[in-house]
Length: 256
Image 1: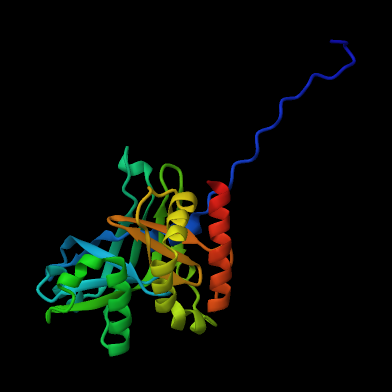
Image 2: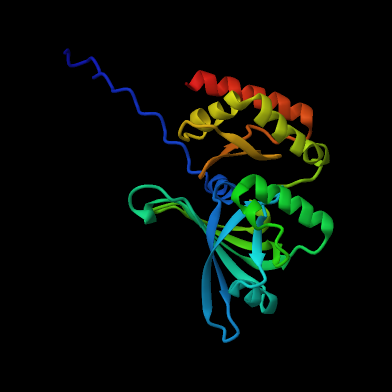
C-alpha cells in the first residue's frame, strides 16, 4: 500500500441502544403475575408472603386477599408494604430484572372498583375463579410511593409512583371499549395475538390470549406465560387502537 494512501477503516459497529429503565419498570409492573409482599406484624416484625398480581388500567397492582391471611391482618393495622416483582428465567437470578414497589395497601370498597378489579384480575389469573367469590376474599390495590428497578448487574434506577403509572387522562373512550376489544381479539384475531407474543415480545409459541389493554400497550397470557407489547404511541380511543393493533401485526410479520 502506498505511504500516502490511508488505511481502510473497519465499518464501525452501530451504537448500542440506550437502556430504557423506565420502560423496563413499566413492563415488569404489567408483565409479572406473582410477587413477594412484605408487611409488618403486630410486633413490627417483617413478614413476606407470595401473592398473585394483576394491574388496573393505570398499572396499579391489584391483589386478591383472604381475610384469613396473615398479611391481610397486618395491612388492616399498618397499610405500609413493599411488593417485589421479578422476572424468572434460567441462569443467575440476580442477572434478571426486578422491581421493588414501596407504597400503601388500600382495600377496594366501592362496588364499581371491585367489579373492575375482578374483571381485570380474572383475565390475568383465570385460576382465581375457583375462589374469587368466596365471602372472605376481597380486592386491594397499592398506592405507589416509589419504585426501585434493578435491571441486572450495573442497571438500577428509582422512580416515583406517578412516573411508572399510566396517565389515563383523555382515555375514557378506550377504557369503555377495553372489554369488547379484548373479547374481539381473543375471538377473531388469535393469529395476530400469537404474532405479537412471539415476534414482538419474544415469547414461546402457543395459544396466546389478550388479558388487558391500556393506553400504553396490550397484555398477553398463554398458560403460565405472560407478555407485554408496548404500543409505539399512546392510544386513547377504539379507532386509534384498531390502527395500532393492525400496524403491530404487520410489524410482527415483517420481523418473522
